[in-house]
Image (cartoon, rainbow, N blue to C red; front, side, top):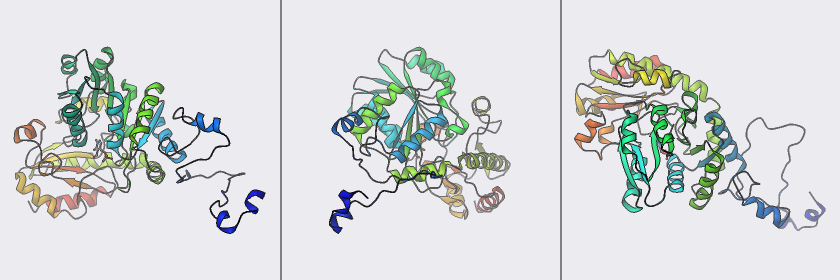
Length: 397
Ligand SMILES: Cc1ncc(COP(=O)(O)O)c(C=O)c1O
């Protein structure tokens, strides 16, 4: 401690406890910098810190060392020039949309989007003068036809929920690029270990890090990755105003989870494909929506775009409809009836009565969702234990 501290009274000294500097060795894990504010030696240094996402740390809404580690880690995996972490996936998505869109702009978006994103776009359309055209997302020509002079953004998801449709990213993004339209891709379901949309021309990649990146159902977080530094800076400025910043402890949990992402993703992919094949042969099941199976409409796209696996989420249609779906999810013991996905646990959902309940019967049918559709988000327990659970529950329908 300095002489200055030595001269203080105890109650003043305790407000300034010694900060231990690590010298001669380095921490192997990323340290948690939980304090939200940083002190500067002089006014010029403080003023300079306001200038951008790569300057000295100042205040956590503008940046934090632990959060920055997460941003660099995800940007590195995605092949981006920089990233912005947010307090949730929706925080990242809304920060990107609000930063890049203005009243009068037109957006082309897939119709099978995550419900929160669909609602955010509908809100922008209803209240902020942005028009949105939804496309199926399996035909680049459809995107070409939807283009308008004021089209600003193409919004896609690598793999859709719950029927695991795989988007032909290079084909669709190619149309947007030709027209000078920015592409944003939600890569939550595949993670950068299975797909890197920036390599296919995307300008921004967004993640609900709450899912596979965090991986343990214990943190809510989001990340947006940018191909280009200018775009990063622009969205960062807006993010500072919006204030959906990530807490350092949540960043640390996400980073800790990410260290096993490689092992987990391999297990998620292998188990889901194995179970999908077994379910396809079960008499209580009419259809299995898994792009790794030859009957799936995007099997060929998946083989080309996602050769290392399509993730752990897929859906099954039960022959007995809604009643069978209810009996099935109620009889499961190892798999839990819960929203979310991408964690170590196996979770199941009945989309028609939960995540997609706002859709009419016709809209549900157009999305490939029937009354007996059940979504599975396969975790990392032993696939034989999981199969035993699924099989006993199917015996109850
Ligand atoms: C594909 C996708 N994107 C975004 C989100 C929103 O993420 P969060 O719940 O972290 O806000 C989700 C959440 O389920 C999702 O599945």
